[in-house]
Image (tube, rainbow, N blue to C red):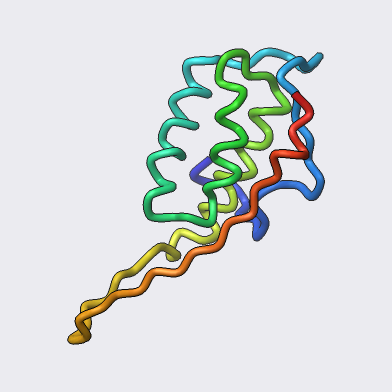
Amino acid sequence: MAECKPCVTLMEERLKLMKVSAAAKVDATFYRSIVGGLRNLVHTRSDITFVAGYVSRFMEDPREDHWTAVKRLLRYIKGTVDQGIVFPKTDESGLQLTMFSDADIAGDID
């Protein structure tokens, strides 16, 4: 993926993946390795949290459509490699961290 074309969105709009898929199987060990790395990257890239969690649901039996979603996420990361969380050093005594999250559990087909 080093020479891939970067993209600006994390995943396709209204993408619904299912555990039971007719798509071809992919190498489960490689899939788990990549998704595990993405789960570690979440600590500094909170923007990928939802998608990394979503694709990790399919680690038991990954299929080609699941792998396509992972590749899309990798392309997004390539295009936004200069982004991350920065905690600047300040003279103020208090640091306030505000974060927002949107969960789509109702959209889970399984």
